[in-house]
Length: 109
Image 1 (cartoon, rainbow, N blue to C red):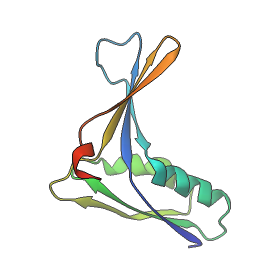
Image 2: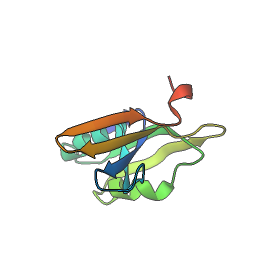
Image 3: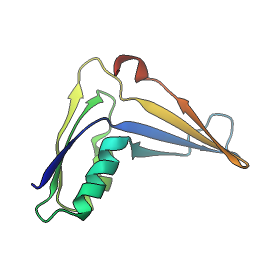
């Protein structure tokens, strides 16, 4: 492993303008640490490690998006008892994107 990224994982929830009120259309792996791991992987010959806490609600399959790029070790992503993974709702309205923090943010600062 050439580098290890330590940070936060967030679950992004996308809501489109034409969706029924508040209906989440798609969820995606978000936060700075997955983005940094992907960026570091571009320059790595031996792979990158990712260390980040997540809540008990985190769906481990979300990490497959990272693993498909190869050589990103996600074994350092660990679930913390009693915590909820922070969520952010991203709503697209005509010409604007609205970002609203969801559940889980209160215990991660």
